[in-house]
Every structure is written in C-alpha cells, then in structure tokens.
Length: 390
Image (tube, rainbow, N blue to C red; front, side):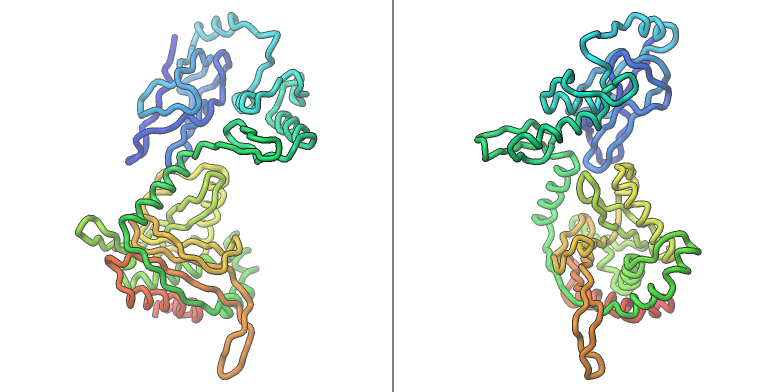
C-alpha cells in the first residue's frame, strides 16, 4: 500500500517553499517520524517527517524545485508491499549506496566516486570522505573560490568566477531591505555609553550568577532591559505604521539579531519586560544555538516591536543599522573600547561603546529618538535605575 508524503501546511504569510535536500533515495528503508526532506522558506528550514515506516518508492519533486502546501512530495510503500519492494530492489554493482548529501556533493563537483576512498562501514563513502577528496584536489590545483552550490566556471586559468544562487533567506533579506529603504524615512542618531559600572557589576556577580542560573551574564541582558524601560517612556518607538495609522503596542517583543550559516536572523524575545536578566540571557543563548543548527521555528522569527543588533561582536566600531519592518526603530551596539574620557575634571580610561538608533522619521520625531537613546545611556551608566525603574 502506498502512502503519500505531502508538503505540510506552511506558516502564515509563507506562500511556497524550496526543496533543499532529500535525506533518502528511492528504494531505501525509512521509519515513521524520520526526517525525509528539508524545505527552505524565506525564514526557516522545515523538516518533513515520514508518516509511516516502509520503503521510499518514488520522489516526485527534485531538489531546488518550488512547492506549495499539500503538494505531493513522494510515495512510500508500507506493509507487505514494502517488504516485496525491498526484496525486488536491485543493488547496483556499479554505484555504491550514497546518502543524498554525498550524492549531491559528487554531482555538484562532477567527481568520479571510484576515485574516492570510503571510510564508512563496508567502505561506504561519507560526506567527510568527499570533502577530504576535494581538499586534496585543491592542494594540487590553482587557487579557486570557495565551495558553493554551483559549479565553478573558470573563465581563465588565473581569473576564476563563480555563480551562486541566493538562498531563499538571502532573497527575502534583499527584498525586505529594499522595501524598508523605499517605504520608510530612515534617520540615525548616535551617542556613546560608559560601561564602567556594568562591567564592574558583571565582574562582581558573574561567577555567582552563572552558578545559580547556569548561564553567562552578558551585556545583552542589560541592553534589553534598558531598551524596554526607554520604550515605556517613548511608546512611539515601540509602534509601527499601518497605512495612515500608527499601531501602539502595549507589549515589548524584542528582536535579537543573530548570525546563522544562512544569514542574519532576528528571533524574538516575547514579553521582554517580564523577563529577568537570567531569562533574557538563556533566551538569547538558545537563539544562538538554534540559529547555528537551523532549528529556529517560524513563530520564533515572527513579530517583534523593536530590535537590537550587536555589530560589536564582529568588531564594528560604528554603523547605521537598518530597520526590521514593520518595526519603526532598531538599536545598534558596537565594539567596547577602552578610551580616555573626562570625569570630574580628570581624564580616565573607561570601556566605551558607540550606540546608534535608526528610526522611521514618519512617526518618530528627532527629539524623541535622541531622548530615547539618552534614556538607554542613562540606564546603562546607572544600572540601579533598571531595578528601581526610574
């Protein structure tokens, strides 16, 4: 008996998805709940599990093709027909059993699998074997560009070129950046903050905090709490534009920009005003792990009323962050540098950071943006205000 593998219901606002990779090939045994195929949307990668145990008999949609919800992906033989199908499946004496990832690498780089030594069980070729073979080949070949999803087109011996298709996420990022540039009146205001007191607090309580909460006390929790307090004082910065209306949000969902192998993503800390320092740090840590493994859910990436991005982790000294629509403002953090500053008529060395606030001037006046950023600065330079909410 055949069972259909269908595209699951896609998240709201996602029209279609792209077949990223198949984990099984026709003729291979599968178990119920096993991930068979990855679908890439413009926000997340969705894993589609097998609805039953049996044999993958037919794949209807190839990698790279676009599908919509409830579209047929593959057929699965279950029950006695699966046993019969498995028994009748011929085993090629020419080509060894290759996983989808291995097969894709071999095809992309036009390799001969006979020349690759397999290190897996019974000599099975693993992905690491193909990568090792490619690395060895590069050592004896002229310098080339990095690996990609497309074949390297060499125009001249010493002038290689490479055409790489954008991922769905990268395409969506490009669309949103153009959209916000064309539809919002973006301005940026700057300030700097003295993080001496925050640094001392972290040094004093870091060990006890980590032992009690099992998470590191970073700078981001201070910035999130400071941003929430400033948003309470200037609610228009937490608002968004909808046509000719302004929507004021009575909650504080803070987007935290994190890097992933697929590009920049902005998961959301819901109700950040109700979170403790430890809860904020744990949430951000979890986002980082999920971003690297590609397991962020659509819900975790949806919504948000205000965002924070930290270019300082990459060494950025100053930048103008771009809005994350439909939000109306974003705070940019930067690298912390020891710089001379004047305090009480004396020059002292302090850990200083430049701050940037990009905002939509259609609804946020310059004076509000400046005062909002000054409020964040005041809360960070005197963190007791965060506890007293003054």
